[in-house]
Amino acid sequence: MHKSQVHAEEGIKTPADTDRKHILVIGISLITTLVLLFLISTVFKSSEPEGGLAQAIPADSSDIDSLTVIENDIVFEEMPEFWLQARGLSNGNAGWGPDIVAPFNELWFIRSNGGREFFSSPALVDGVLYFGCNDGNLRAVDAANGSVKWTYATVCGICGEPAVDSTTVYFGGQDGVIYALDRFSGSKRWSAGLGYHVFCNTAVFSDTLIVTGNSMGTVCALDARTGEPVWDDEIGGIVLGPVTVDSIVVFSTENGNIVAFDTAGERLWARDYSSQASPPSADASGVYAGFSNGAVRKFSLHDGNVIWETDIVSSASRCVLARPVIVGDVVLCGTNDGQLASLAASDGTVRWRQNFDNWIQLPPAVGQKMIYAACDDQRIHILDLSTGAKLDSLKMEGYSGTAPLLADGVLYFGNTSGDFMALRGTVPQEDSVETAIELPDTVIVEPVEDMEELPDTVAVEPVEDMEELPDTVEVEPVEDMEELPDTVIDEPAAVEETPGEIIQALPEVQENESEVSANSMETE
Image (cartoon, rainbow, N blue to C red; front, side, top):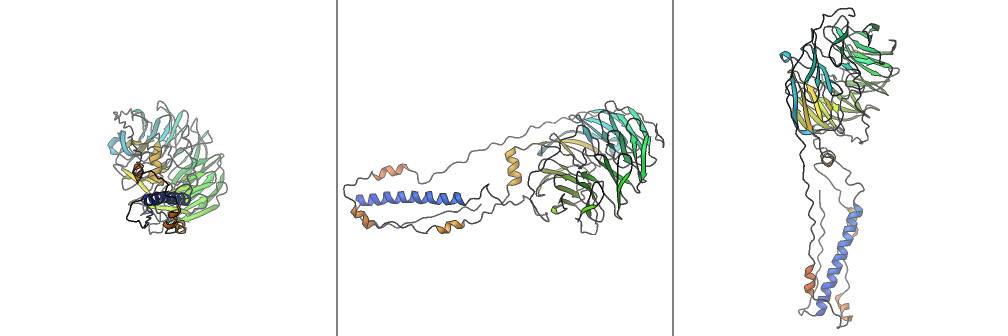
C-alpha cells in the first residue's frame, strides 16, 4: 500500500537575542502545526471509500483466463437425510462446510483387495459411508474411524454410486445386476438382472422406484420393495446418470442422448447429439450436461429446449467429461484438457477458467467458499469459489478415482491405486479465512486528488504584528513543551494464531465377506 507523507517546512527569521517575542513565535508556530495536522487527517479520512478497499487481485491468477468476481450471497443446501441419488442432491455437489485447509491429517484408510480401483463415489448417511470398488465389494464403513461394518461381495467390479434410503442400499454392478441390501446388516433383500453391465449410478425415484440403466442403452424403473420391473425404455448407448428432480428423471448416454421421463415411464422430451454427453445435473431451472465437442448446455427441465450453450474447450481434444456442479448461480465444469471452468447458471457466461496439468474428469466438492477438485495430476486442488485462484493442494497417492466428498471438516476420496482415505483438515478462523481469500497480495490505492486543494504553504501573519503585543505578556517556559512527544506511534496489537486440533486414528480394517448368488436376467 502506498503511504502518503506530508512534509511542512517553515523558515522563521529569529533575532539573535532570545527575548519573549522569540518564545511567543515558537508557541504560535507549534499551534499552527497542530492545526495543519488536524486538517490533513480530516482530508485523508474523507477521501477513503466506504467499506474499505474495493479492488482485489487473486492470490494466484496467472493461469486464470478471465475473472468476474461473484458476490458471496450463495445459499447452500443442507446435507440430505438420505442419499437418494448420486452426490446426494441433483446439483451434483457433495460438499457441506465448513471449508478446510492445511494441515491435513489422515484419519484412516482402506486398501482394496488386490489394489483394485475405487471408482464408486461414496454415499453418506447417519455417519456411515457406502461405496463400491473394482474388487467387487460394496462396503459400509464408519466415517469417523474407518471400521468396516459389513461387506457384500459381487462377482464383478462396482463403479456406480449407490443410493441409500431409511432401510436399504441400492447399487448396480458390472455383472449386470441391481442389488438391494439391508442398510444395517448388509444382507440381501432382492436382486434384479439387467442383462448387461451397469456402469451408471442408482437413484430412488418418487420414493417407490429404483431407476438405473445398462451398457446397451436400456433404462428401467424397479419396485423399491421387491425389485420387480415397473417400466423400461431404450435410449441407445452406455447409460449415464440418472438425476432426479421432483417427478422427473433424466438420463444421458455416451452416444449423446439426453432423455427425460416421468414416474410412469413416459418420455417427456429427448435430445440427440452426435457428441458424447457427461452425466447430467439439474436444479429447478434446468438440466446441465457437458459434451465431447467442448460445449456445456443447459436444457429446460420441462420441455428440453436449450436455454444456453457455451463452448469452453477450443483445443483439438474438444472434450468435456465431468458432471457439472451447480452452486447457486455458479456452474463448475471440468475438462480433459486440464480446465475447470466457472459459468453463470443463468446465461452460461464464463466467469473464470483455471488451468491444470492433467484432466479434471470428476465433479468437484464445493464447501462454503472453496472448491475441492480431484485432478489426474494425482492431487486434490483447493480453489477460491469466487475467483478460481489456487489456494492449496494435497496428494491423493494415485490418479483420481472417486469424486471427493466434503463433510464435517473431513475430505473422503478413493484413488485408482486401491486406497480409500479420510483426511481431516484444519478449519480456519473466520478472520484468517477472510484475509486469505478476500485480501489481495498487492493493494493499489489511487492517489488522493483532493490533497492538491491544500496550499503548499500556509500564510502566517507577519512577525512585525507581534510588536503590538504588550511586553507584559507572559508565556510559560519552553521547557514545558518538551513534555509533548514529536511523534506518537500506536503499536499494533499482537495476534496470536492458534493451530487447529490434530486428531488421527488408524484403525485396522476388517472385512466380512458375504456370499452373493450369480446374476440372472430375472428378478430373484
